[in-house]
Image: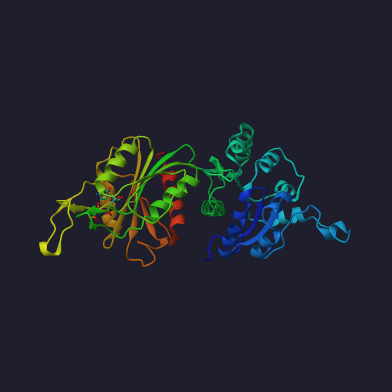
Length: 405
Ligand code: CTP
């Protein structure tokens, strides 16, 4: 699906020689599908793992491997291709980046086409390193990665998991989804401005069980909360995500805690909040639960005509807020601003994000959202209709701008 942020963007994908190079085919395909114009540059060893023809076909562009293009070798072409491409690009993604290429960039080498291009680059560079666990953890590799980060490049660290060698450890290339999210983040002008901060996000619905088979739930998909957790993580925060049942997936480095009921969510929030600076309660917590939980399936012949409900505890209203930045969500269908402002005061919040169900492209189960952010000071920020990831980033901006943290 075409994506507003990627459409028309000129992206260079650099591929280096490691087994994860095969994943670059999917990355090219996704970038092209999102509307980007993609050029691929490979190191000679990358071509041992994946054929340039594959990446050329998927990118619909010639793949660059050699410093001197054949026509230049023949003496028939005067070319400054590396400068031309470096100026052309809006973004370069290096995935996978071997420890060799990482070391060479960190020390200014330019002895192949990819490195020559990197040395002349004017646009942001995303580097996603990958290697076997011992190679990745090697202190020299880690020092080089740190150096690249300090030079302003955006690092998508390797993940923990099963490696090509059969070993288990940190070194796996980050998932393509995360690399694409990082690309969206950088193309939107964000950076790791949440480094050193710790954020607790709640997401999804809660399910209040009636019997072993049935529950009372709500239509929350968890998409907004997961988008907030991912955006905060990509912007450098340490993130804990407490979620009710959803189909959404998180990143491996997000501390993910799965809960089911409002009571379980409350327990998890109280426990986790101590270690966090910011709480964003985007979960749609049930306000009521059955007064009694039947431990046997309720049968038709029981002729049940009603279920007695009791109120759940209000997590947001009751949590300890001292020295914390606390953000709530308000889902309203009527008198939206008034109701949201009332909740901001009654729950003693720093900020509330108003979600109106009046707009069809907003709310449950959709990828977009249109929200209004209301600060404690009374300041209101109306955001346009955005993807939930973009809306999440704007909400994070408001958190930074509030000056509380
Ligand atoms: N919330 C909570 N615990 C609850 C209910 C809600 O922490 N038991 C939080 C939600 O996560 C959200 C905020 O309170 O951040 C507002 O939730 P919302 O459902 O909009 O409002 P309620 O306070 O439940 O009021 P009402 O349903 O009457 O609008």
